[in-house]
Each structure stands twice: as C-alpha cells, then as structure tokens.
Image (cartoon, rainbow, N blue to C red):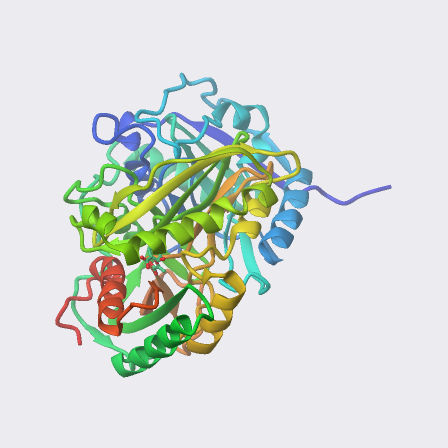
Length: 480
Ligand SMILES: C=C(O[C@H]1C=CC=C(C(=O)O)[C@@H]1O)C(=O)O
C-alpha cells in the first residue's frame, strides 16, 4: 500500500479593493500598486520572494520546496512535484469575480489565467528562480510557503502550505486591516535613509576596466568575434541593514511617472534584488513574447540611437540572436516588431518585441534554455563571445545576466535576464538568501562592446545602469 502523504496546500481567491490594482492610476495590467500592496501585507521581519511587473505577479515568503539544476532540469523536477501536490480551495472563497480586460494591449500583456487557476488550483504553485549566466551551472527554483498571486485582470489568490496556516492567517488578517489602504504608489519606502554608506574595495577599478576593454576591442578588431558583453561591479556597505521588502517596494515606485510602459519586473529572488526590463521568454496560454534590449543612450536621447551605427548594429545582433533560434525553441508563427525606444529611469534603449505561438512540447523554460545566453548579455558568435568573456570579463557573474523569473506547473511563466540588480552579500562575502535586512550589496552592470567601444563610454554607461539600484538603496553620488 502506498502510504506516501501528498504535499498539501490550500488556496483562496481574494476580493481586494480597486486601489490594489491602481484602478484610475495606472493602465490595467501594470502591477506596481498590486506589488506594493502585497509587500505591505506581508508580516514584517520576513524576507520576501518577489516577481512583480506586468502579467502574473508573485509575492511570497518562506520555502516549501526547492529544485536545483540547470533551468530545464530544475523546471522538469518542479513540474513533476507540483503536478503531484494536492491544492484544495478553502470554502467561502469569492470565486467568479468579473474579468477585466487589460488596457493598452501590448505583446507583454498575457492572457487572463484566472479561469485556469480556478479550474486547477495546482497552477497557483508558482516557483521563483534565478539561474547563472553559465547555462551549464546549477541554479535554483523555490516554491514559497505562502504566496499572493496577482493576475493583471484584477484577480488575486493566496496559496499556502499546510504547515504555514498561521502565517497565511496573519497575511489574511493584515489584508483585512491594511488592505483597504495599501502602500500608495509613488511614495518611497524606508529601505534606507541614505546615510552610513561606504564603498568596499573595488573588484574592478577604472584601470582594470580599461585593460578589459582594450583586450576585448583588440580581439574584436582581430576578427575573433563581432560583439562581446563585459560587466563590472561596485560594492557598498551600510551601517544599518536595508530591508529587502521596502527596497522592492521602492523599486516599484515610479515617482516621476516617466515610464509609459512597464519599467521592468521587480524581483527579489535568491541573492538578487532588481528591476529587469529584458524578457527572454514570456509564455501564457500558448502565447510567446520576448523583449530584446541592446543599444543604450542617456535618458531622453533614445531617438539618437537610430543614427549611431554602432548602437544600431549592437541591437541588430541581439535581436537576430533570438530570431535565429525561434525554430529550435519551438516557437511558431513568430513575428518581430519594429525596433523602437524604451525609456527607463536612467537610460533609453533600442527594443524589439517578438511574439509567436508555443509549439507542442515546448514551455517557458525549454524556450529560454535555447535562447540563453542571447547576444544582449554574451555576444556574437555566441561561443567565440563566451571565450572572450572568460578571458576579459573582469568579474565573476554568477546569477547576474542569467535567467530570473517564475514558472507555473503547466510550463507557463516568464524568464527575464537578471539585469539592473544588486547581489546581497553577507559578512563573509557569501550570498545570504534569508536575512530580511542586508547591509552589503554588490551592484552589477554590463555593456555591449563593439570594435569601436571606448573604456570611458562603457564605464559611464554601466555606471548609469547601476544608478537605479544606487538610487533605491540611497547610495548618494558623494559615496566614493
Ligand atoms: C548587460 C546589460 O545590458 C544589456 C541590455 C540592454 C542594453 C545593453 C547595452 O546597450 O549594452 C546590454 O546589452 C546590463 O544592463 O547590465
């Protein structure tokens, strides 16, 4: 007789006030208000696991189960486990709320999954993950113990492991108390008061960066590759710890309302916290979408990129690196949109959106594994660029520029590139994925290097890319 007990979870649908969804504040589908509200109702003192942008959003705490391996290995093990788990609806759930169409229907506005969640609550067992740049190295998927799942059509769910009943009850109570007045969009949290920061010994100073760029550009001019992406870091320590919950809440704020489209997906997963704008693959009910970024200017100067042959070619290479692999990835009927400008807080980018249908046997992780590493983070040709990275990249990237995101038990989900982020460091310099407050941070940024690149230009560009995390961490310009 098989006496193995199935892993038991419970789920409920939440009736939340319109303020959670920013009704009248942001276009439907943009989840910044939802993310800020969800973070507000988590009990304090717990480090959140976060994925919030446009589409399915996850804000969780605790760990039910983790899966290690390459992206496809971990995803396959997770899907097997999730499809054997038991998820029961809690009676009294306000099921059947009216569906709301997503406004400004762009490629990155996925299908309404709420009906599927209602039909099969196991689909709510979302796993969040971060995987290394080196796609052969092992990464990790994590299923939280308690998770709020938001759907951009104004639906929300809570799912919890049977051992986390008390925590789930506390979240439900806090929704009752705080839920009518969630954290307001645009307000700054209390991640850091901007004081007490100092710089840690640099991993890469300007002289080292100059050496790397000179080495890489000479190799490119010698014909070893056409483009390579190099990266650098800046590390800082704060006298008081930074609360990851407040930090991710601040990442979701858009105080000057400059960005008309989703600025990025805020994430706190594994040892990384950031706001990634680049989508490797989004899969939702058979639809595929990707957003390729490469080519960077000062904010507000995006149009000038079209007149700069170096930036145009850099983008073309990144776009082609995805388009050329669509067949192998099992994406059918693919269409690539015109190159356009994406305005982000500290930079403008050239962007391309690619859409299509997911073929039989493919899912978000198998597709991502074929694309990664794209030329936006590696170069062209891929193998030759990877060799140049091994030779000239002045840092060890770990999960930076690797896939970060979430996956569902049916293979839907989204993997972005881990960009515009910082790595949390504990006192030993090792990643610590558990403490709610972190005092040591390693900011990371990379740039596409072409034969004509100069060290100063790419230093400044990577500095601007790190600017977002500097701002939300409160590391002022005078911290030298
Ligand atoms: C590697 C990074 O950006 C990539 C994505 C967009 C634009 C890029 C560029 O213009 O160099 C990079 O390819 C980073 O943000 O750290």
